[in-house]
Length: 436
Image 1: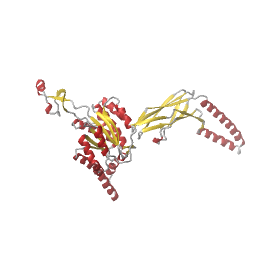
Image 2: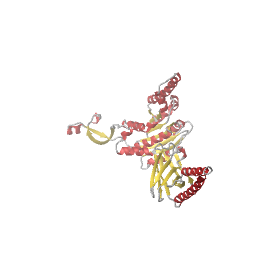
Image 3: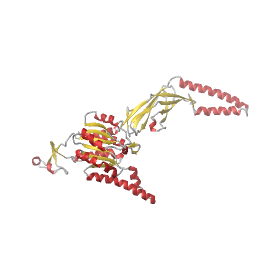
Image 4: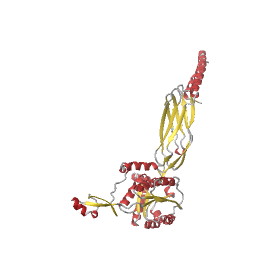
């Protein structure tokens, strides 16, 4: 039982009346009667709250949370009291969120129930532990409050961003992927498997004109061929210290994991096989490329517990083990980060080796904070020096792109928040140009 602020205000009034009795005697008698009435009211209030267990509350949320997304949590509260009550609902959310404002004020009528909803955005993968739901109930009189402890502690696993997959799936069904920034790329197949004959439109390859069909239809007709199917796409994720850099509360590794899931989903929709490789100081995990039903869940389980390390990544081990595990020529989408041209040059020989055996796409990150700083005008001499240094770092990122291009290696320099869209567009572009 907890005494409320209203009770203490009434108690102060009683004390003032009793104290005034030393000056004017009748006030002392009035104070005594007021104290007696206050005790009776408190007892009546306590009886109305404690005569039954009148509150039930339980938490409703998904069995797993999506990292980096807003996840909905609902609390259902039901009252069995025959009179209106006021509630203060406190949910003991995982401490990692460092939030102290998950506190709701609700009023319920007799035998009424309500649902309150809030959202949580995790930024780390792992297990998050919820505690109890604490409900403080106050009756119509409002002198005391009864605490209810509801709902059992709950552990929720935070997986890579599977909500993003649902978003892509729904937009793909409605043919609205351009809303997310995915470009519509015209694909022209040149393989021997014939698909159909259609009317010529501007942009079609004149080499595919079917002259016999054109003569019959008195208009240009072209042959359409199917593109090659079931190509292998491997997401190769660097887990070294270079991927520990944070952006909006999430590490570059988390962004790479989310992007690899989306790319795997899109590749499987395009009839390609998706696989996964992670590495740091050692070759870590390998999931063979596949497009079987339920394969996305396999990728989720493998990416769920991946964490960055403090060591330097070993690209030589990556080359050796990929040569053992992947025999068919594949597209390798390598998620890493190069802070300088020197760091890239140290790994260039291994990148060239991977590109000889497969088609390599190197994905690395643009420093958003650095870019915003460069956009601000310099105000003094020190700022000019800082801008020159910042522009040097930005120039080295662009130099890495041109250096990789000189050696026949494809690259993608992007920001963490645009990573998924840019990777998908690059994949679709390379597929349309028959570069896989």
